Amino acid sequence: MPTDAIVLAAGAGERLGSAVPKAFAALSGVPIVVRAVRGVAAGGADRIVVVVGPDRLAEAAAVVDAPDGVALSIVAGGGSRVESTRLGLACLQGDPADVVIVHDAARPLAAAETFRTAVAAVRAGADGATAALPAADTIAFVDGRLITEIPTRSRLARIQTPQAFRRDVLTRAHEAAAAADDATATDDCGLVLRYVPGARIAWVQGDERNLKITTRLDLELATRLLAQFEGDDGAGSRSSSRSSSGT
Image (cartoon, rainbow, N blue to C red; front, side, top):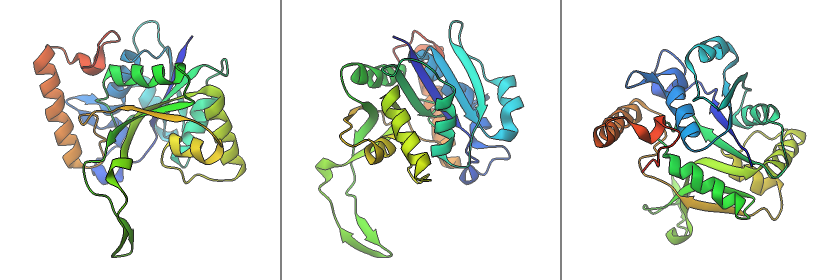
């Protein structure tokens, strides 16, 4: 059964303070989006759609590649994360039960095993699955400058990508969101839970090293982590080899 993937790389990334959109900023000399695509391929994706800003199509075509045997498409994104995912999904045709991965290019250090584990959870019967980490900090609900509630920490998790879904479930969620003109969801698990009643979303073990690059400090941390990976195995196989275990 094939595995498709959508890599979201259309954001401006203004908080990074880069002269180019975040996905095209260099991480140890390689654009972030390139590292993300290689990581998704290492995780077992057979077809990858990269969604970039409409003004970055030519640049993406020039720099983004995929290993032999992996089909790659590059499409223009929309004005929101939800719309960009929907546009990427529209490019992927297949059986309703096929698995579709959604991954943020801003997480270029995701381990191959994280992708495989999320996909395996869907193939085992879940409607969707996401990488997540149990919350280590106490989290508060706030109203302005006032704390209104402290939820039980043991019931909280920090959501990452990759996320994986049955194609029909993800499609149904995006069609409903488009009909409602709703682009407010910040991830696809939230969108599915909002628009597909009864959907079962599992979580699989995430990775502290799978950080999201948002600020300049994040980029510096990712650079150090990447150097550590390459020092450990000599080739940076965490995100550059389709056969890598990523651990």
